[in-house]
Length: 458
Image (cartoon, rainbow, N blue to C red; front, side, top):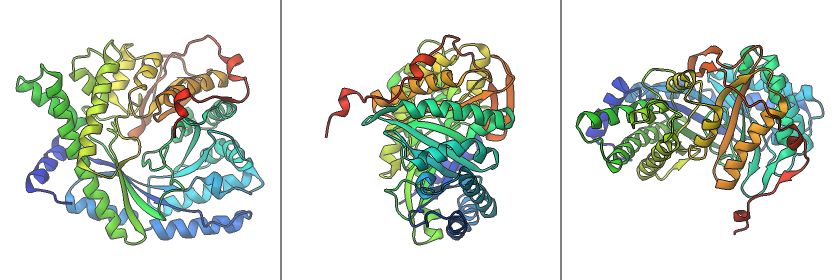
């Protein structure tokens, strides 16, 4: 991979003035060789294998960060879905013991998060899958770094409404076990989950992946925003093609920086670690000027959520994908634009102004990468309503053959308009209003919502 002097100088400017960073380098580790049936043997195996693979990750990433001067915000581990690894464990307490071991090895390796406390139940659930889902409230309440994800739907199989209903109850229980429902920030449910996603909380190491792989997640909303503002100062902001070309060029440069970092980290960790993918998703932070919402408003939307917002977001996501895909043949993960409410200062401001609602967020997710991400709702929102929100979002993913997800926090003792500060990258939660009409009767129906007719292709 050749990197020119000009690219290096441009990257330095983007780092110093425009919030460019590498959001994460994530080391995926296969655990398909784990022993089954005995929790003590399994926990010992997990600690030893993960520690051996990941003990140098933070050190190596720091060295690469210093060499190139590009900040790496998070160092993470993703694992084979633990429902597979733990299949055969008889007790829920065994699953919680496994989660505690994962938390311990993550702390000992110095990583920010360890992900893969996950199950794929889009067509049905095994006993192990159900045990893992039932253990999530206790497991995440007992840990700080463990992240969990459940795939509930796919375009090929439809939506598993039995598990959608169940996860509504799990989310409610987890919210009540953790301060300000903060444990729910480490739990996400999906349709069409990608198996090489480096982003928390949805990361896991797919069974089609190599033994060990480095996946990179980039950032860069600040870079795109600064480029659009330069275009405006130059008097060239009256043509949509000029705007999209500018975004494509920035996405190209951001992706090149991500691949450069990922390949060097993988090389220095050595065999069997391979370089995997760059996830192009523009991931915002609570920092002012590092916001997807600010980009949308720079395009001429008065406040994110106003009419035209979904069209502006669609244009942004498409340009990011086109620019990033031209920069690398190793594009994967989610790739597009995150629109979390709490982790994006501009989205928080739009919600407080009243321009951004839950319904408008859902419309925007039809064109973005993820879905209803870091959405906070009142703590008295029922489990059935949460399941209904999840079902709506998964339906968008299923019908449109794209990844969608829900990361929702029903915060106890709150009402719409309240603001809760979780700190750090999680930022501020603005409690959003939820329609008061019930979907409970629909949610209680059993079975699967069938896939769309477009799934019948091969």
